[in-house]
Length: 390
Image: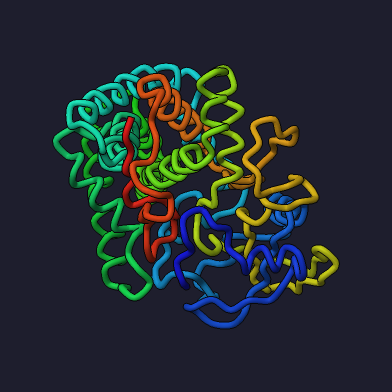
């Protein structure tokens, strides 16, 4: 799959949304074909209807974007259905509470301030990805998981490799997955003898009591590390790029900082977070979707990024509009598999944007927008570098 420039939407998904919203596709790996659902209401339907199963994907060589799944197919939240899925979500939700975010937010704000202090000392121009968007989410997820500071670099390297490994490197992807799981298993083992009030402590306790398995605990922590490190790095970088290339919206946020939560929500809708499509489902019986009959046993993919650009729901979807009335975007998915880490991702985006705008009111790109280099050959889209001056 060719890399798309900057934040340009996928033209194929836009075309399907317009002309063939429930269509047949074949992806680079695996066997057979799948259905691709692109329209907002259809995506919400498929992702919330129990007749579509993620569990039934396990063990099947379905057509897919990657040679190796990012998440374990034998444990964790991604490839199971209720009622087991409900139990696992309930365990993880003990760590993702408003109270825990209130505790984490001051740490995040302090870390962002320290990183921007260092950037200011280094002087302009500076790479915002290097100074802020890279280290910040790793620091936050480290505090949330309970990783020791001395292990930062190891965790960062394995998390980055897990999602950045190009589809041409199957062995690299497998090695990254093995290394990530080994580090998490080591951390969970320590928490059994050294309990703490962090995510690793919550998962280790649940595994020790038999509420979940050790493999499930590892897979849950892996998913959160990936979304909390690599994904937030790239998505927050894309958000800042969007603001830097929409100076009128950035100026408004400086004048009206109370708009920040609403602006962040619109940025989540606006930014094309990923390349291609994510984890598929299998129809358990014949189901009609968008006027097309999907037969029992057939594979279905949902395109959240195209659903977020459905003009029937989001008029003028190419516009970055902080006054948009409909705010029910699908950047975090929908239904039982809606991302549990959404509360933390929103908090991090608010801290990053709010701290940068308050600290550097004159911040601007130090190069023309077209010269900003973006990730290549990755599932998650975002800037590799973001040179700024102030």
